[in-house]
Length: 523
Image (cartoon, rainbow, N blue to C red; front, side):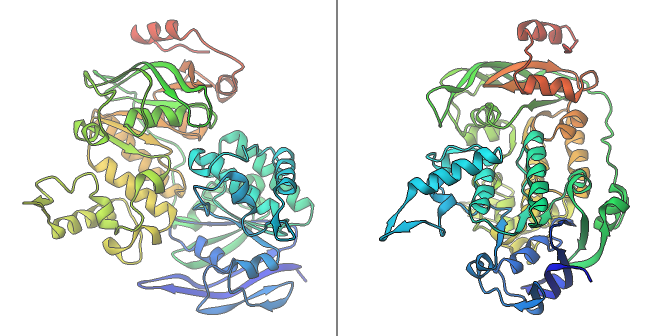
Protein backbone atom coordinates (compact mmCIF):
# COMPACT_ATOMS: atom_id res chain seq x y z
CA UNK A 1 0.00 0.00 0.00
CA UNK A 2 1.33 3.46 -0.92
CA UNK A 3 2.41 5.64 1.99
CA UNK A 4 0.41 8.81 1.37
CA UNK A 5 1.18 11.66 3.73
CA UNK A 6 -1.53 13.88 2.18
CA UNK A 7 -4.70 12.86 0.35
CA UNK A 8 -7.11 15.39 -1.15
CA UNK A 9 -10.13 13.34 -2.16
CA UNK A 10 -12.89 14.61 -4.50
CA UNK A 11 -12.25 18.29 -3.71
CA UNK A 12 -14.73 20.76 -5.21
CA UNK A 13 -14.42 24.53 -4.79
CA UNK A 14 -16.73 27.03 -6.50
CA UNK A 15 -16.51 30.81 -6.78
CA UNK A 16 -19.17 33.08 -8.31
CA UNK A 17 -19.33 32.20 -11.96
CA UNK A 18 -16.63 29.51 -11.96
CA UNK A 19 -15.92 26.05 -10.57
CA UNK A 20 -12.21 26.30 -9.78
CA UNK A 21 -11.84 22.68 -8.61
CA UNK A 22 -14.25 20.06 -9.93
CA UNK A 23 -14.03 16.73 -8.05
CA UNK A 24 -10.21 16.76 -7.89
CA UNK A 25 -8.23 13.99 -6.18
CA UNK A 26 -4.52 14.44 -5.39
CA UNK A 27 -2.33 12.07 -3.38
CA UNK A 28 1.14 12.98 -2.10
CA UNK A 29 3.58 10.25 -1.08
CA UNK A 30 5.99 10.65 1.79
CA UNK A 31 9.39 11.86 0.63
CA UNK A 32 8.37 12.62 -2.97
CA UNK A 33 8.47 15.72 -5.14
CA UNK A 34 5.04 15.87 -6.77
CA UNK A 35 4.52 18.43 -9.55
CA UNK A 36 1.12 20.00 -10.16
CA UNK A 37 0.72 21.17 -13.75
CA UNK A 38 -2.03 23.07 -15.54
CA UNK A 39 -2.87 26.10 -17.65
CA UNK A 40 -3.29 29.55 -16.09
CA UNK A 41 -6.60 29.43 -14.23
CA UNK A 42 -6.72 25.61 -14.17
CA UNK A 43 -7.27 25.59 -10.39
CA UNK A 44 -3.80 24.68 -9.13
CA UNK A 45 -3.37 27.56 -6.68
CA UNK A 46 -6.97 27.19 -5.51
CA UNK A 47 -6.39 23.51 -4.71
CA UNK A 48 -3.23 24.33 -2.75
CA UNK A 49 -5.02 27.17 -0.96
CA UNK A 50 -7.62 24.64 0.16
CA UNK A 51 -4.84 22.43 1.56
CA UNK A 52 -3.26 25.41 3.33
CA UNK A 53 -6.55 26.54 4.86
CA UNK A 54 -6.98 29.76 2.88
CA UNK A 55 -10.16 28.38 1.29
CA UNK A 56 -12.70 25.89 2.55
CA UNK A 57 -13.79 23.22 0.06
CA UNK A 58 -17.47 22.95 -0.88
CA UNK A 59 -17.10 19.17 -0.73
CA UNK A 60 -14.41 16.54 -0.44
CA UNK A 61 -12.03 15.26 2.22
CA UNK A 62 -8.43 15.94 3.25
CA UNK A 63 -6.41 13.25 5.00
CA UNK A 64 -2.99 13.49 6.63
CA UNK A 65 -1.25 10.21 7.40
CA UNK A 66 -4.53 8.44 6.65
CA UNK A 67 -6.59 10.46 9.15
CA UNK A 68 -9.23 12.99 8.12
CA UNK A 69 -8.27 16.56 9.08
CA UNK A 70 -10.16 19.85 8.98
CA UNK A 71 -7.89 22.76 8.03
CA UNK A 72 -9.82 25.92 8.90
CA UNK A 73 -6.96 28.39 8.41
CA UNK A 74 -3.17 28.57 7.85
CA UNK A 75 -2.57 28.21 11.59
CA UNK A 76 -4.17 24.77 11.42
CA UNK A 77 -1.98 23.98 8.39
CA UNK A 78 1.17 25.03 10.23
CA UNK A 79 0.13 22.92 13.22
CA UNK A 80 0.01 19.96 10.81
CA UNK A 81 3.52 20.93 9.57
CA UNK A 82 2.20 22.12 6.20
CA UNK A 83 4.02 25.17 4.81
CA UNK A 84 3.40 27.19 1.66
CA UNK A 85 5.42 29.53 -0.54
CA UNK A 86 2.80 31.62 -2.29
CA UNK A 87 2.77 32.69 -5.90
CA UNK A 88 1.68 36.18 -4.82
CA UNK A 89 3.90 37.18 -1.96
CA UNK A 90 2.37 37.39 1.52
CA UNK A 91 4.77 40.03 2.79
CA UNK A 92 4.40 43.28 4.73
CA UNK A 93 6.18 45.90 2.60
CA UNK A 94 7.08 48.24 5.46
CA UNK A 95 8.53 45.44 7.63
CA UNK A 96 12.13 44.27 7.41
CA UNK A 97 13.12 40.97 5.84
CA UNK A 98 13.76 39.47 9.28
CA UNK A 99 10.41 40.64 10.67
CA UNK A 100 8.57 39.15 7.69
CA UNK A 101 10.28 35.78 8.09
CA UNK A 102 9.49 35.42 11.79
CA UNK A 103 6.02 37.02 11.68
CA UNK A 104 3.58 34.63 13.35
CA UNK A 105 6.37 32.36 14.61
CA UNK A 106 8.20 34.77 16.91
CA UNK A 107 10.46 33.55 19.72
CA UNK A 108 9.68 35.38 22.99
CA UNK A 109 10.80 35.29 26.60
CA UNK A 110 8.85 37.00 29.37
CA UNK A 111 6.78 38.67 26.66
CA UNK A 112 9.82 40.15 24.91
CA UNK A 113 10.77 39.39 21.33
CA UNK A 114 14.12 37.55 21.05
CA UNK A 115 15.30 38.75 17.66
CA UNK A 116 18.93 37.76 18.14
CA UNK A 117 18.08 34.05 18.14
CA UNK A 118 15.76 34.52 15.17
CA UNK A 119 18.44 36.41 13.28
CA UNK A 120 20.98 33.64 13.90
CA UNK A 121 18.57 30.98 12.65
CA UNK A 122 17.62 32.99 9.56
CA UNK A 123 21.26 33.64 8.64
CA UNK A 124 22.14 29.98 9.16
CA UNK A 125 19.29 28.94 6.88
CA UNK A 126 20.18 31.51 4.25
CA UNK A 127 23.81 30.39 4.18
CA UNK A 128 22.94 26.69 4.23
CA UNK A 129 20.57 26.95 1.27
CA UNK A 130 22.26 29.75 -0.67
CA UNK A 131 19.37 32.18 -0.18
CA UNK A 132 21.39 35.17 0.96
CA UNK A 133 19.29 38.15 2.07
CA UNK A 134 19.83 41.38 4.01
CA UNK A 135 17.75 40.79 7.16
CA UNK A 136 17.49 44.52 7.88
CA UNK A 137 16.34 45.66 4.42
CA UNK A 138 12.72 46.74 4.05
CA UNK A 139 10.71 44.46 1.79
CA UNK A 140 9.46 47.45 -0.23
CA UNK A 141 13.07 48.25 -1.18
CA UNK A 142 14.20 44.81 -2.40
CA UNK A 143 13.74 43.19 -5.80
CA UNK A 144 11.05 40.68 -6.69
CA UNK A 145 13.66 37.91 -6.71
CA UNK A 146 14.77 38.83 -3.20
CA UNK A 147 11.16 38.87 -2.03
CA UNK A 148 10.83 35.32 -3.35
CA UNK A 149 13.83 34.31 -1.23
CA UNK A 150 12.13 35.78 1.81
CA UNK A 151 9.03 33.68 1.13
CA UNK A 152 11.15 30.51 0.88
CA UNK A 153 12.99 31.37 4.09
CA UNK A 154 9.67 31.91 5.88
CA UNK A 155 8.82 28.29 5.17
CA UNK A 156 12.27 26.97 6.06
CA UNK A 157 12.17 28.90 9.35
CA UNK A 158 9.08 26.94 10.42
CA UNK A 159 10.63 23.48 9.85
CA UNK A 160 7.65 22.23 7.83
CA UNK A 161 7.47 18.60 6.61
CA UNK A 162 4.92 19.13 3.81
CA UNK A 163 6.01 21.95 1.53
CA UNK A 164 3.74 23.63 -1.01
CA UNK A 165 5.73 25.63 -3.58
CA UNK A 166 3.40 27.70 -5.76
CA UNK A 167 5.43 28.91 -8.77
CA UNK A 168 8.56 29.40 -6.61
CA UNK A 169 10.93 29.73 -9.58
CA UNK A 170 8.91 32.31 -11.53
CA UNK A 171 11.26 35.16 -10.60
CA UNK A 172 14.51 33.24 -10.03
CA UNK A 173 17.56 33.16 -12.28
CA UNK A 174 18.61 29.85 -13.91
CA UNK A 175 21.38 29.50 -11.33
CA UNK A 176 18.96 30.14 -8.47
CA UNK A 177 16.52 27.64 -9.96
CA UNK A 178 19.24 24.97 -10.04
CA UNK A 179 20.05 25.75 -6.41
CA UNK A 180 16.37 25.55 -5.42
CA UNK A 181 16.01 22.19 -7.16
CA UNK A 182 18.97 20.85 -5.25
CA UNK A 183 17.38 22.14 -2.04
CA UNK A 184 14.15 20.35 -2.97
CA UNK A 185 16.01 17.11 -3.58
CA UNK A 186 17.66 17.52 -0.19
CA UNK A 187 14.25 18.03 1.43
CA UNK A 188 12.97 14.85 -0.20
CA UNK A 189 16.02 12.88 1.00
CA UNK A 190 15.23 14.11 4.53
CA UNK A 191 11.73 12.64 4.20
CA UNK A 192 9.91 15.89 3.51
CA UNK A 193 7.11 15.84 0.90
CA UNK A 194 6.83 18.58 -1.71
CA UNK A 195 3.93 19.76 -3.85
CA UNK A 196 5.48 21.83 -6.62
CA UNK A 197 3.36 24.04 -8.89
CA UNK A 198 5.13 25.17 -12.04
CA UNK A 199 4.49 25.89 -15.71
CA UNK A 200 8.07 25.01 -16.63
CA UNK A 201 8.15 21.52 -18.10
CA UNK A 202 11.95 21.34 -17.93
CA UNK A 203 11.75 21.77 -14.15
CA UNK A 204 9.12 19.04 -13.85
CA UNK A 205 11.25 16.64 -15.86
CA UNK A 206 14.38 17.52 -13.87
CA UNK A 207 13.16 17.38 -10.28
CA UNK A 208 9.75 15.71 -9.82
CA UNK A 209 8.93 12.07 -9.12
CA UNK A 210 5.31 12.28 -10.27
CA UNK A 211 3.14 14.88 -11.97
CA UNK A 212 -0.61 15.49 -11.71
CA UNK A 213 -2.34 17.56 -14.39
CA UNK A 214 -5.41 19.82 -14.07
CA UNK A 215 -7.31 21.36 -16.99
CA UNK A 216 -10.11 23.87 -16.47
CA UNK A 217 -10.59 22.74 -12.89
CA UNK A 218 -10.78 19.03 -13.65
CA UNK A 219 -8.28 16.29 -12.82
CA UNK A 220 -6.76 14.86 -16.02
CA UNK A 221 -4.34 12.30 -14.59
CA UNK A 222 -1.12 11.51 -12.73
CA UNK A 223 2.01 10.16 -14.44
CA UNK A 224 5.42 8.97 -13.33
CA UNK A 225 7.81 11.65 -14.58
CA UNK A 226 10.43 9.15 -15.70
CA UNK A 227 7.85 7.50 -17.96
CA UNK A 228 6.60 10.64 -19.74
CA UNK A 229 7.83 13.46 -22.00
CA UNK A 230 7.43 17.25 -22.17
CA UNK A 231 5.26 16.83 -25.25
CA UNK A 232 2.91 14.42 -23.50
CA UNK A 233 2.62 16.68 -20.46
CA UNK A 234 1.87 19.72 -22.62
CA UNK A 235 -0.87 17.80 -24.46
CA UNK A 236 -2.40 16.77 -21.14
CA UNK A 237 -2.24 20.38 -19.93
CA UNK A 238 -3.64 22.31 -22.92
CA UNK A 239 -5.34 19.57 -24.93
CA UNK A 240 -3.25 20.14 -28.07
CA UNK A 241 0.32 19.99 -29.39
CA UNK A 242 2.50 22.97 -28.43
CA UNK A 243 5.57 24.23 -30.31
CA UNK A 244 8.64 24.63 -28.10
CA UNK A 245 10.65 26.54 -30.72
CA UNK A 246 10.32 30.23 -31.62
CA UNK A 247 9.84 30.70 -35.35
CA UNK A 248 11.04 34.11 -36.52
CA UNK A 249 12.62 35.64 -39.61
CA UNK A 250 15.90 37.60 -39.38
CA UNK A 251 15.33 41.11 -38.06
CA UNK A 252 15.56 44.18 -40.26
CA UNK A 253 16.62 47.03 -37.95
CA UNK A 254 15.41 50.50 -38.85
CA UNK A 255 15.89 53.90 -37.27
CA UNK A 256 17.09 54.31 -33.70
CA UNK A 257 14.05 54.45 -31.41
CA UNK A 258 15.75 54.39 -27.99
CA UNK A 259 19.21 55.83 -27.33
CA UNK A 260 20.67 55.56 -23.82
CA UNK A 261 23.83 57.58 -23.21
CA UNK A 262 25.94 57.29 -20.04
CA UNK A 263 22.95 56.55 -17.83
CA UNK A 264 23.58 56.32 -14.09
CA UNK A 265 20.89 55.31 -11.59
CA UNK A 266 21.39 55.41 -7.79
CA UNK A 267 20.73 52.28 -5.75
CA UNK A 268 17.92 52.24 -3.21
CA UNK A 269 19.72 49.63 -1.13
CA UNK A 270 23.26 51.00 -0.76
CA UNK A 271 25.46 54.02 -1.47
CA UNK A 272 26.78 52.67 -4.77
CA UNK A 273 25.03 53.26 -8.08
CA UNK A 274 22.81 50.46 -9.36
CA UNK A 275 23.46 51.47 -13.00
CA UNK A 276 26.85 52.92 -13.93
CA UNK A 277 27.23 54.94 -17.13
CA UNK A 278 25.31 52.55 -19.40
CA UNK A 279 24.99 53.32 -23.14
CA UNK A 280 23.15 51.39 -25.87
CA UNK A 281 20.64 51.83 -28.71
CA UNK A 282 17.52 49.94 -29.71
CA UNK A 283 16.29 50.18 -33.31
CA UNK A 284 12.87 49.78 -34.87
CA UNK A 285 12.23 46.19 -35.87
CA UNK A 286 14.62 44.47 -33.46
CA UNK A 287 14.46 42.72 -30.10
CA UNK A 288 17.32 43.65 -27.77
CA UNK A 289 17.55 41.63 -24.58
CA UNK A 290 19.07 42.71 -21.27
CA UNK A 291 20.43 39.52 -19.70
CA UNK A 292 22.02 39.09 -16.31
CA UNK A 293 21.73 37.57 -12.89
CA UNK A 294 19.08 39.15 -10.67
CA UNK A 295 20.29 42.28 -8.88
CA UNK A 296 22.86 43.50 -11.40
CA UNK A 297 21.07 46.69 -12.35
CA UNK A 298 18.67 45.52 -15.07
CA UNK A 299 15.57 46.32 -13.02
CA UNK A 300 16.88 49.76 -12.02
CA UNK A 301 17.74 50.53 -15.64
CA UNK A 302 14.23 49.64 -16.80
CA UNK A 303 12.63 51.72 -14.04
CA UNK A 304 14.68 54.73 -15.13
CA UNK A 305 13.81 54.22 -18.81
CA UNK A 306 10.08 54.05 -18.03
CA UNK A 307 10.11 56.99 -15.58
CA UNK A 308 9.51 55.02 -12.39
CA UNK A 309 12.96 55.97 -11.05
CA UNK A 310 15.14 59.04 -11.62
CA UNK A 311 18.56 58.89 -13.22
CA UNK A 312 21.37 60.88 -11.58
CA UNK A 313 23.37 61.28 -14.79
CA UNK A 314 23.19 60.52 -18.47
CA UNK A 315 20.58 60.94 -21.18
CA UNK A 316 17.60 59.01 -22.57
CA UNK A 317 16.46 59.83 -26.09
CA UNK A 318 13.22 58.43 -27.49
CA UNK A 319 12.62 58.91 -31.21
CA UNK A 320 15.20 61.71 -31.17
CA UNK A 321 13.71 63.61 -28.21
CA UNK A 322 15.22 63.90 -24.74
CA UNK A 323 12.86 62.20 -22.23
CA UNK A 324 15.36 61.85 -19.37
CA UNK A 325 13.17 63.91 -17.03
CA UNK A 326 9.79 63.36 -18.71
CA UNK A 327 6.87 62.07 -16.59
CA UNK A 328 5.51 58.57 -17.15
CA UNK A 329 2.34 59.80 -18.92
CA UNK A 330 4.39 61.77 -21.45
CA UNK A 331 6.55 58.73 -22.23
CA UNK A 332 3.45 56.59 -22.73
CA UNK A 333 1.82 59.16 -25.01
CA UNK A 334 5.05 59.41 -27.01
CA UNK A 335 4.76 55.70 -27.77
CA UNK A 336 6.34 53.66 -24.97
CA UNK A 337 4.66 50.50 -23.63
CA UNK A 338 5.84 48.74 -20.48
CA UNK A 339 5.20 45.20 -19.25
CA UNK A 340 6.56 45.60 -15.69
CA UNK A 341 8.54 43.14 -13.59
CA UNK A 342 6.18 43.44 -10.61
CA UNK A 343 2.66 43.11 -11.98
CA UNK A 344 1.06 43.94 -8.63
CA UNK A 345 3.07 47.06 -7.84
CA UNK A 346 3.42 48.57 -11.33
CA UNK A 347 1.10 46.65 -13.66
CA UNK A 348 -2.37 46.57 -12.10
CA UNK A 349 -4.66 48.37 -9.71
CA UNK A 350 -5.62 45.21 -7.86
CA UNK A 351 -8.93 46.48 -6.53
CA UNK A 352 -10.07 47.75 -9.94
CA UNK A 353 -12.10 45.59 -12.30
CA UNK A 354 -10.39 43.85 -15.18
CA UNK A 355 -12.03 46.21 -17.69
CA UNK A 356 -10.78 49.30 -15.86
CA UNK A 357 -7.27 47.83 -15.71
CA UNK A 358 -7.41 47.10 -19.45
CA UNK A 359 -8.09 50.78 -20.19
CA UNK A 360 -5.60 52.30 -17.72
CA UNK A 361 -3.39 53.66 -20.51
CA UNK A 362 -6.26 54.81 -22.74
CA UNK A 363 -9.28 55.87 -20.66
CA UNK A 364 -8.57 59.57 -21.37
CA UNK A 365 -8.61 59.11 -25.17
CA UNK A 366 -11.67 60.41 -27.11
CA UNK A 367 -12.70 56.82 -27.86
CA UNK A 368 -13.23 56.18 -24.13
CA UNK A 369 -13.96 59.64 -22.67
CA UNK A 370 -16.29 62.53 -23.40
CA UNK A 371 -16.63 65.81 -21.47
CA UNK A 372 -14.80 64.33 -18.51
CA UNK A 373 -16.96 61.18 -18.33
CA UNK A 374 -15.72 57.68 -19.17
CA UNK A 375 -17.71 55.81 -21.82
CA UNK A 376 -18.14 52.66 -19.78
CA UNK A 377 -19.73 50.68 -22.63
CA UNK A 378 -16.70 51.40 -24.82
CA UNK A 379 -14.36 50.37 -22.01
CA UNK A 380 -16.37 47.17 -21.52
CA UNK A 381 -16.34 46.20 -25.20
CA UNK A 382 -12.62 46.99 -25.47
CA UNK A 383 -11.90 44.76 -22.46
CA UNK A 384 -13.98 41.95 -23.96
CA UNK A 385 -11.93 42.19 -27.16
CA UNK A 386 -8.62 41.88 -25.29
CA UNK A 387 -9.96 39.10 -23.06
CA UNK A 388 -10.89 37.11 -26.16
CA UNK A 389 -7.68 37.82 -28.10
CA UNK A 390 -5.33 36.99 -25.21
CA UNK A 391 -7.41 34.22 -23.60
CA UNK A 392 -7.67 35.98 -20.23
CA UNK A 393 -9.73 33.70 -17.98
CA UNK A 394 -11.67 35.09 -15.04
CA UNK A 395 -14.80 34.29 -13.09
CA UNK A 396 -16.86 37.33 -14.07
CA UNK A 397 -15.21 38.44 -17.31
CA UNK A 398 -14.56 42.21 -17.55
CA UNK A 399 -16.20 42.77 -14.16
CA UNK A 400 -13.74 40.52 -12.29
CA UNK A 401 -11.66 42.31 -9.66
CA UNK A 402 -8.01 41.96 -10.69
CA UNK A 403 -6.97 40.77 -7.23
CA UNK A 404 -9.21 37.71 -7.58
CA UNK A 405 -7.56 36.48 -10.80
CA UNK A 406 -4.76 33.93 -11.06
CA UNK A 407 -1.26 35.31 -11.53
CA UNK A 408 -0.96 33.99 -15.06
CA UNK A 409 -4.21 35.61 -16.14
CA UNK A 410 -3.19 38.88 -14.51
CA UNK A 411 -0.02 38.72 -16.60
CA UNK A 412 -1.95 38.00 -19.80
CA UNK A 413 -4.17 41.02 -19.12
CA UNK A 414 -1.12 43.31 -18.81
CA UNK A 415 0.57 41.85 -21.88
CA UNK A 416 -2.63 42.25 -23.92
CA UNK A 417 -3.10 45.85 -22.80
CA UNK A 418 0.47 46.87 -23.63
CA UNK A 419 0.81 44.98 -26.92
CA UNK A 420 -2.54 46.20 -28.22
CA UNK A 421 -1.37 49.81 -28.09
CA UNK A 422 1.05 49.08 -31.00
CA UNK A 423 3.53 51.64 -29.72
CA UNK A 424 7.00 52.52 -31.00
CA UNK A 425 8.87 50.93 -28.10
CA UNK A 426 7.87 47.92 -26.02
CA UNK A 427 9.80 47.51 -22.77
CA UNK A 428 8.98 43.93 -21.76
CA UNK A 429 10.26 42.68 -18.39
CA UNK A 430 9.74 38.99 -17.77
CA UNK A 431 6.71 39.05 -20.13
CA UNK A 432 6.01 35.32 -19.79
CA UNK A 433 6.55 35.04 -16.03
CA UNK A 434 4.02 32.63 -14.58
CA UNK A 435 2.50 31.67 -17.94
CA UNK A 436 1.86 28.14 -19.17
CA UNK A 437 3.51 26.80 -22.34
CA UNK A 438 0.48 27.53 -24.49
CA UNK A 439 0.33 31.16 -23.35
CA UNK A 440 4.12 31.55 -23.71
CA UNK A 441 3.90 30.34 -27.30
CA UNK A 442 1.16 32.90 -27.99
CA UNK A 443 2.95 35.84 -26.30
CA UNK A 444 6.20 35.10 -28.12
CA UNK A 445 4.32 35.22 -31.44
CA UNK A 446 2.77 38.57 -30.47
CA UNK A 447 6.15 40.08 -29.54
CA UNK A 448 7.71 38.90 -32.80
CA UNK A 449 4.72 40.26 -34.73
CA UNK A 450 5.23 43.62 -33.03
CA UNK A 451 8.92 43.54 -34.00
CA UNK A 452 8.08 42.65 -37.60
CA UNK A 453 5.61 45.56 -37.69
CA UNK A 454 8.46 47.96 -36.83
CA UNK A 455 8.22 48.16 -33.03
CA UNK A 456 11.50 48.38 -31.12
CA UNK A 457 11.52 45.81 -28.30
CA UNK A 458 13.69 45.98 -25.19
CA UNK A 459 13.31 42.63 -23.44
CA UNK A 460 14.53 41.82 -19.95
CA UNK A 461 14.36 38.14 -19.10
CA UNK A 462 15.96 35.80 -16.59
CA UNK A 463 14.99 32.78 -18.74
CA UNK A 464 18.08 31.99 -20.80
CA UNK A 465 16.03 29.82 -23.14
CA UNK A 466 13.78 32.82 -23.83
CA UNK A 467 16.79 35.12 -24.19
CA UNK A 468 18.44 32.87 -26.76
CA UNK A 469 15.33 32.15 -28.82
CA UNK A 470 13.56 35.53 -28.84
CA UNK A 471 16.29 38.18 -29.00
CA UNK A 472 18.13 39.61 -32.01
CA UNK A 473 20.87 41.13 -29.83
CA UNK A 474 21.87 40.34 -26.26
CA UNK A 475 23.36 42.85 -23.81
CA UNK A 476 24.76 41.29 -20.63
CA UNK A 477 24.73 43.37 -17.43
CA UNK A 478 27.00 42.74 -14.46
CA UNK A 479 27.25 45.01 -11.40
CA UNK A 480 25.44 47.85 -13.15
CA UNK A 481 27.46 47.83 -16.35
CA UNK A 482 27.05 46.29 -19.80
CA UNK A 483 29.94 43.80 -20.06
CA UNK A 484 29.11 42.12 -23.35
CA UNK A 485 27.07 42.39 -26.55
CA UNK A 486 26.24 39.22 -28.50
CA UNK A 487 24.47 37.69 -31.45
CA UNK A 488 22.27 34.87 -30.06
CA UNK A 489 23.05 32.83 -33.18
CA UNK A 490 26.76 32.84 -32.41
CA UNK A 491 27.06 32.74 -28.63
CA UNK A 492 26.49 29.77 -26.33
CA UNK A 493 24.68 29.67 -23.00
CA UNK A 494 27.99 28.76 -21.35
CA UNK A 495 29.69 31.87 -22.79
CA UNK A 496 26.80 34.07 -21.64
CA UNK A 497 27.11 32.55 -18.20
CA UNK A 498 30.74 33.65 -17.91
CA UNK A 499 29.78 37.27 -18.62
CA UNK A 500 26.72 37.12 -16.35
CA UNK A 501 28.94 35.88 -13.51
CA UNK A 502 31.55 38.60 -14.11
CA UNK A 503 34.27 36.16 -15.21
CA UNK A 504 34.64 37.82 -18.64
CA UNK A 505 34.19 41.29 -20.11
CA UNK A 506 34.27 42.81 -23.59
CA UNK A 507 35.61 46.16 -24.75
CA UNK A 508 32.12 47.57 -25.17
CA UNK A 509 33.23 50.60 -27.16
CA UNK A 510 34.73 48.26 -29.75
CA UNK A 511 31.61 46.10 -29.68
CA UNK A 512 29.43 49.16 -30.23
CA UNK A 513 31.56 50.24 -33.18
CA UNK A 514 31.21 46.77 -34.67
CA UNK A 515 27.45 46.87 -34.20
CA UNK A 516 27.30 50.25 -35.91
CA UNK A 517 29.12 48.75 -38.88
CA UNK A 518 26.47 46.02 -39.08
CA UNK A 519 28.21 43.32 -37.11
CA UNK A 520 27.78 42.18 -33.53
CA UNK A 521 30.71 41.25 -31.33
CA UNK A 522 31.01 37.64 -30.31
CA UNK A 523 32.79 36.14 -27.35
